[in-house]
Each structure stands twice: as structure tokens, then as C-alpha cells.
Length: 355
Image 1 (cartoon, rainbow, N blue to C red):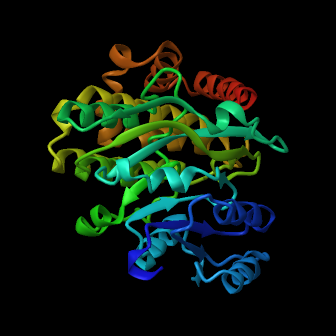
Image 2 (image 1 turned 180 degrees about the vertical axis):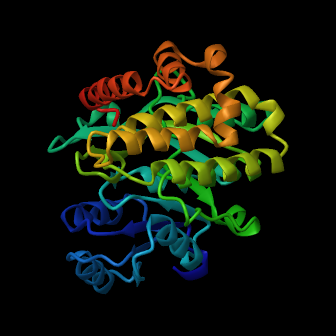
């Protein structure tokens, strides 16, 4: 092991004792063995730290680090700093991986690449992978090495689109991917620790901007169990202010890399999408305890942000019909109608499992 280890698997851990063993066992059960597992306990208050210690004693490839609770970004950054692998793979502690994931990353044919992308498998609670397609390559692979390919990746990331119509990839998530540590270190790439949402999008955007080669391997190797108590499903009262910080960082990255003029339409579409998210999953979230008047004041605060003001001018041109209607009434200050649309939209998202 040591400096010559091929893959560093980084698992940020926070109060997931009920899932953590399954996650760690999936790494230990890999058909490929030249890896190190870095567990970063982010101040858990359950038995997660005890589990981390148990596994580190049982297998010398498993290391654990403990820090005060600072969030998933800080945990991932700590893991990247401590890692020794040529490749870095991030796994969330309530998810798990297939036995051939790490072996695929280590395949000789991919060592000239700087980013590997894979498909997810999303499972309902208690369900197990069906085998077959879940562990088999659907299609061989697809390279994204030209400048036009990079722009396409960025546009898909900004608008949360699949690279292929029958794919199940998430360009925003750091999971189901493999990153070259040399690229991360060369450009000092880190997750934004002052963001609670969308920090992974920024990391991937910066990485895609720096990576010279990328391959999308059509293999479903990463398993996500849909949880009703997951962080993304919860109510974040600071959704608006988090997004304002995110939007400023996003614009700085796109302008700094010279990509902004080339992806302008995709960028404004992403801003409009986030505005709809702020209204549906933030301001008018069913669990919000704010009064209607306070929600209206939040809408007023949102209206004063320059990035949102510029984006809303593109609403009719590049939005789909539901988002057009929502933002049309928002722009006209018909907040009662906005609230009604948001409640209906949230219920639809719940039923379809998209929230």
C-alpha cells in the first residue's frame, strides 16, 4: 500500500451507523484489492465512529479520521488531503458499490484518462439489486476528450441532463466517478465548505474544466437507496442564501475559465431551475414555519439579487412550461398563486421520487 496504492476510496461519515457497515463491506468485498479506504467521521453522535474504529483495526487498508462537525464538504476535503491513491473515488456512507467498480477504475485501458463516469442504480428501501443489468455494461463506453465534448459535459451538468437518453448518470454528484488525484492536487480543487447544497456541482464543474480526458463507462456500479430522511429531502431554511453564494461562485468559475460566453443559455437555464427550486423546496416548502408575510419578504429579497433579475428575462425563451408559469407569477408578485403551484409541484415531486 502507501504511495503506490491505486485507488483511495473516501467515505464521509455523519450519523449513518445503520448504513455504514453495508457501505464499508461493499468496498471490502471488491474483486480488486489495491486500494485504501479513508473514513472521515464528521463529528457523529451515534455509533458511526465506533464502527470506523472496528474496521480500521480489522484491516490495515482502512484508515479513519475524526473531526468536529463541519459538513460533508470538509469531510471530503480532509479525505482528499489524506489520500495516497492515483485515483480518488467518493462514496456516501449510506450508499454502496458493486464488486467490480474499483477493478474497472484500475483497468489498464483507462489509466490515460483523468475522469471516469459511471451510472447509478437507485433502489427503494429494502430492495436489492436485481443483478443482470444493474451489474453489466449496457453499452461499451464513450469518450469526451475534445473541447466541444467539454462544453457538452458542462451544459449537461448545468441543466442536470443525461449524457445519453437511456443513461442514469449524475454529473452533479461526486459519486459513481473516479478522479485523478494529480489533477485535484495540481489545481488545488476542493469542495466549497460554505455551501450546504450544490457544492458538489462546483467541484465537478472545476474538475471538468481542468481534466484533459474523460470516459463515460456504461456500467451501473453505484447503488443509492432512496431515503425519505435524506438531507436532500429535508427542509433547509437557508436555501435562498445558500443559492446566492452558489450562483456567485458558479459565475466566477465560468467567467474565469472563459466558458461563460459558450454556455450562456445553459447557464441561465440553470439559474432559472434553481429559482424554481428555491420557491418549491425553500421558501414555500411544506415544512417551513415562516408566515406567509415572511415568505413574501423572502421573495422580495430574491427579486433584488442581480443574477436572478438577469436570468428571469430569459424565462419565456428557455424555460419549460411549468417553470415558465411559476416564474411568470413570481415575477408579477402573485405570491398566492406561486404558493399554490409550489405545493402542487412538491407533491408531484414526492410521488415521482424526484425530491
